[in-house]
Length: 380
Ligand code: PMP
Ligand code: GLN
Image 1 (cartoon, rainbow, N blue to C red):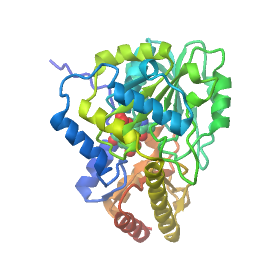
Image 2 (image 1 turned 45 degrees about the vertical axis):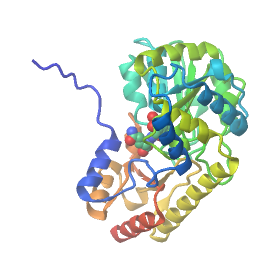
Image 3 (image 1 turned 90 degrees about the vertical axis):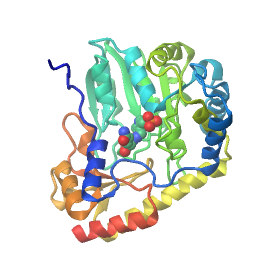
């Protein structure tokens, strides 16, 4: 008797974090900051856990958090939302992604995935029964190829998944790109699953533009956010989904059967955190931007070729100049021989892979970044 149908792959984040533990490498692979996150937000959660409600919160999320999310997105992204009908709380962005795909897709439907794609998208789409249609973006600038998206959308397309800012590329797509995307989807039944978890991690004064801020996309978009990214606390699985009522109704049905709800103490703390003043968010960005610059400068000084990073806390190295054609093998060697773990960007492609880029997480203490850069310099 073998009841195990082993169809799902092992995520590259698990593989590389295990390799980092085994080899003692500095782990710049899986993306997580090495600070614990804002103390006042954690204190709110502790207080709510001790003195607050411990039973099921409402299925759609605490009213206070839904109102805080609507106010936050109005303030930061100029998006106007009805917290009652257009905001829902999920257990992480991952649940929202899974729910959207499960709710929308029937076997044989098509989903357009833009590569490089966050590694959860394809397994989830496939398990939902979708036939994937791929669009391929390439370094160094990862230009959003809207013509290719338009060509990939057909009568069976149920969803297009767009991650903006784009992990792992570090690209940030602005209003023009999104308006072109809106025009490309016109006349189709495709829902845009806009994974905007990196919305607050943009650099050099760039402001995130939400797909919901684009009139042509307003009624066909699930905007997905993540408190884990907004507050640099990746273990906090609190997702924020915003969408027009006709879409939210569909997603909330999936949410009922996936998790139904999310720990109320975390919801209360996130509601508090979203109301922090502008300076907190801007300072957090500036601090990460300084880390990006520090790490990029050290790598450049060592003769490497870092690519631009306009958003996310990832920096990519073009390893083609080193004669590398297999980024996965290179990252394995890097962990074992240089003592630094990174993520091969080919892991974010399913076909026609880009195999000459390695992704490094720079949301780390300066000393950690300096040590990693020194090891990379010695390796080179
Ligand atoms: N989407 C993208 C693009 C991400 O980078 C991540 C976090 N690594 C997620 C979704 C998952 O977010 P959460 O932890 O809130 O489920
Ligand atoms: N989002 C993180 C990254 O891109 C990892 C998420 C995970 O480990 N599942 O590195």
